[in-house]
Amino acid sequence: MAPALLVEDDPDIREDLADLLRLHGFEVQTAANGAEALAMLQKGPLPGVILLDLMMPVMNGWAFREKQLQDRTLSPIPVIVITGAADPEREASALSAAGFVGKPFDTGQLMRMISRYCS
Image (cartoon, rainbow, N blue to C red; front, top):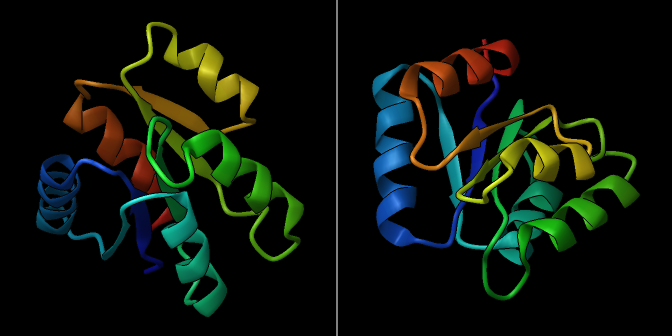
């Protein structure tokens, strides 16, 4: 099973969500911002899906996604946007993301989305 990469700057959300994913049987890698996530991706192993927060310091989700799409090895990895934005569907569409989950998120919906890529 391919791991999921969770990119979230809030340490409480990152840890709680990673624990939740592990409880549901998923392997999880975590990064605190886009720059850290890119460094992890370049070292491997590649995840089955990236769960991406948008508002982060150092490198936000938009900058991360731009860099990811420029790299032939990384661009095929699907991204699920996790955001508190008023219109998460629009944000996800603008980033050509595979999907989105609004904050606060629906656990069942999130697990179904991740299962598509990390089974």
